[in-house]
Length: 85
Image (cartoon, rainbow, N blue to C red; front, top):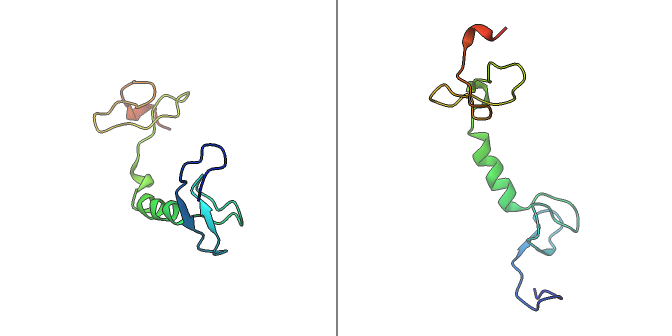
Protein backbone atom coordinates (compact mmCIF):
# COMPACT_ATOMS: atom_id res chain seq x y z
CA UNK A 1 0.00 0.00 0.00
CA UNK A 2 1.35 3.47 -0.92
CA UNK A 3 0.96 6.50 1.37
CA UNK A 4 -1.07 9.27 -0.28
CA UNK A 5 1.00 12.02 1.38
CA UNK A 6 4.62 10.83 1.10
CA UNK A 7 4.36 8.13 -1.59
CA UNK A 8 6.31 5.66 0.58
CA UNK A 9 5.34 2.04 1.03
CA UNK A 10 3.20 1.44 4.13
CA UNK A 11 3.42 -1.83 6.06
CA UNK A 12 0.12 -3.71 5.91
CA UNK A 13 -1.45 -6.69 7.60
CA UNK A 14 -4.48 -8.88 7.07
CA UNK A 15 -7.24 -8.35 9.64
CA UNK A 16 -8.09 -11.69 11.30
CA UNK A 17 -11.78 -10.76 11.62
CA UNK A 18 -12.91 -8.85 8.51
CA UNK A 19 -10.19 -10.14 6.16
CA UNK A 20 -9.33 -6.68 4.78
CA UNK A 21 -5.75 -5.65 4.13
CA UNK A 22 -5.13 -2.69 6.43
CA UNK A 23 -2.18 -0.42 7.16
CA UNK A 24 -0.40 -1.02 10.47
CA UNK A 25 -1.18 2.39 11.95
CA UNK A 26 -2.15 1.09 15.37
CA UNK A 27 -3.20 -1.94 17.34
CA UNK A 28 -6.71 -2.14 15.87
CA UNK A 29 -8.19 -2.70 12.41
CA UNK A 30 -9.53 0.66 11.24
CA UNK A 31 -12.16 -1.21 9.21
CA UNK A 32 -13.88 -3.31 11.90
CA UNK A 33 -12.04 -2.47 15.14
CA UNK A 34 -10.63 -5.98 15.72
CA UNK A 35 -7.32 -6.43 17.50
CA UNK A 36 -4.54 -7.05 14.99
CA UNK A 37 -2.23 -10.06 15.29
CA UNK A 38 0.85 -8.34 16.68
CA UNK A 39 -1.14 -6.96 19.63
CA UNK A 40 -2.62 -10.39 20.33
CA UNK A 41 0.90 -11.87 20.40
CA UNK A 42 2.02 -9.22 22.90
CA UNK A 43 -0.96 -9.95 25.13
CA UNK A 44 0.05 -13.62 25.25
CA UNK A 45 3.48 -12.54 26.53
CA UNK A 46 1.85 -10.24 29.09
CA UNK A 47 -0.28 -13.12 30.37
CA UNK A 48 2.91 -14.73 31.68
CA UNK A 49 3.52 -11.74 33.99
CA UNK A 50 2.29 -12.51 37.51
CA UNK A 51 0.96 -9.23 38.90
CA UNK A 52 -0.13 -10.85 42.17
CA UNK A 53 3.52 -11.17 43.20
CA UNK A 54 4.23 -7.42 43.07
CA UNK A 55 4.72 -5.38 46.23
CA UNK A 56 3.09 -1.95 46.30
CA UNK A 57 4.84 1.08 47.76
CA UNK A 58 4.26 1.47 51.50
CA UNK A 59 3.74 5.24 51.12
CA UNK A 60 -0.04 5.71 51.00
CA UNK A 61 0.25 8.64 48.59
CA UNK A 62 2.38 6.75 46.01
CA UNK A 63 1.20 4.41 43.26
CA UNK A 64 4.58 2.76 42.68
CA UNK A 65 5.77 -0.84 42.90
CA UNK A 66 8.78 -1.97 44.94
CA UNK A 67 11.75 -3.34 42.95
CA UNK A 68 14.08 -6.23 43.82
CA UNK A 69 16.24 -3.93 45.96
CA UNK A 70 13.27 -2.92 48.14
CA UNK A 71 12.98 0.59 46.69
CA UNK A 72 9.83 2.09 45.14
CA UNK A 73 10.23 2.57 41.38
CA UNK A 74 8.21 5.81 41.46
CA UNK A 75 9.09 7.76 44.62
CA UNK A 76 12.39 6.09 45.53
CA UNK A 77 11.45 5.40 49.15
CA UNK A 78 12.44 2.10 50.77
CA UNK A 79 9.69 -0.42 51.46
CA UNK A 80 8.56 -0.55 55.10
CA UNK A 81 6.19 -3.48 55.67
CA UNK A 82 4.85 -2.19 59.01
CA UNK A 83 3.15 0.75 57.26
CA UNK A 84 0.99 -1.61 55.15
CA UNK A 85 -2.45 -2.01 56.67
